[in-house]
Amino acid sequence: RAAEKRLNELRAAQREVTEKVGYESLMKEARDKLQVVKENVAKAADAEGPFLMGVEDLPIEETMATLKACESAATLANTAASIARMFFTTKLVDVKRFSEKYCTEATVKLKELQKQLENHTKRLGDLKTNCSTRKK
Image (cartoon, rainbow, N blue to C red; front, side, top):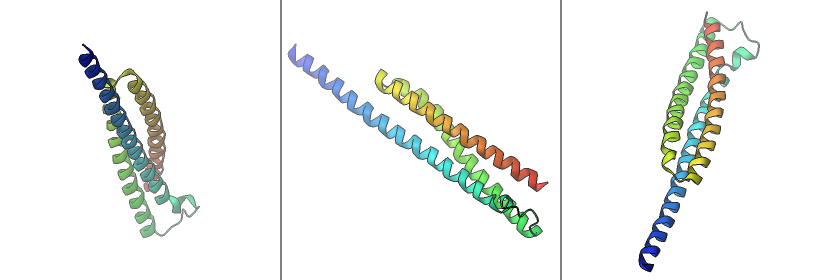
């Protein structure tokens, strides 16, 4: 009886540690994916820089090169955002396997990160709109 009780306690402790490590790993990966999106959106915004400085009358070659750089940076940012969005969606389902403590905490934090991702995606959408408007 005592040995069985001790075994159950050890199993519970092991599960707690395993979930904690899984939770911490998941949150680090989620933050890293969001950081990649943030950096790529910033690069897309930087690529648009010449237009924002009021230099609307660039030579055609320079304008086309700048537009191509904007589109390229926006594509990279869009890809990173898609990867992050799929990751968050998948992990929101996966965390339901955690105990209540980690499930609740992970869900709240992932939803916060998802909200930040939406903000970056909106900014990216604005950049893409500006780029396509200039292209015309």
